[in-house]
Length: 46
Length: 346
Image (tube, rainbow over the protein chains, first blue to last red):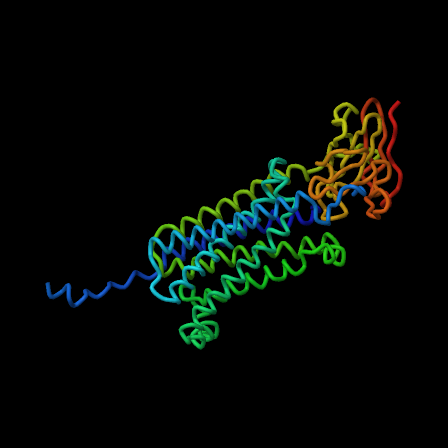
């Protein structure tokens, strides 16, 4: 690889790693809670 | 490359590489669908298609992870170089697996007569302003289009047409595709499924790929710092015996490209470290059958002048070398490609 390509790599990967880490953390942290499942009628009658 | 070494055409190594690749993919998809169907038997056609979507999706993601790991692994340890040899076929197969994942998803909507819902997902413009709720399929589609571009231009025709630096720069878009795929899964499957499997798979894979690239980049940076040139501009390489026989020492002038200084017995010659094929690190190769051989795809050059042996026409830039006070020195100003510049030590 040329020196230029190596420089691009060195700039790109920290930025990409940081973006993915933030995206990963936020997508877990902000995901909505699971809606509580309604109790089946048959079960509620027991 | 030599007349006997076919770097581009089919050869036994490529057949073996591709056979292992195809068998590995078939085994993964077969196992995923069989185990998935055993654990949660699909009740109808959409559930079967859903299982297929997952099998091909996870397979494409894992393949992309492996592809992106091969480059830095080969930089960190030459033992991984055989994986790099036919990486382009790996990439093309990944595109087809990802395309089948996308096609299966379209089919999932189609069998339920719900294609308008799919179109609505792509065109629900207000959702593009959200993070959670972002149309994650658009991210996957963008990644697929990048993979299509990579696959379509993977042939040596395009490499020759664009030239190695432009071709390499274009193919760096695969890193962006990987980022899009990670977000596609995190904003898609991870939002609806609460099991730890997918987040762990994505987190561990993306961390490993990023870590490998950062590590390789850090090591490469050390090699780019360059040596200080003497007053007359020449760079010290070392005593002749410090250059391994049939191998090279790589030096870099500050701000310049790397130079591979080879020794073949008593012959010392310096070539650019960039192979004419894909800009592979020629100085990490060996002299085989009297020819400098690139470690990536086996392209070969004569040490004396950087020319590929007839009938091939590739040429590398050469550099002047000299022996001064028992030390080999190289002039960092490149000569025209194909210029004879090697010296014989007496």
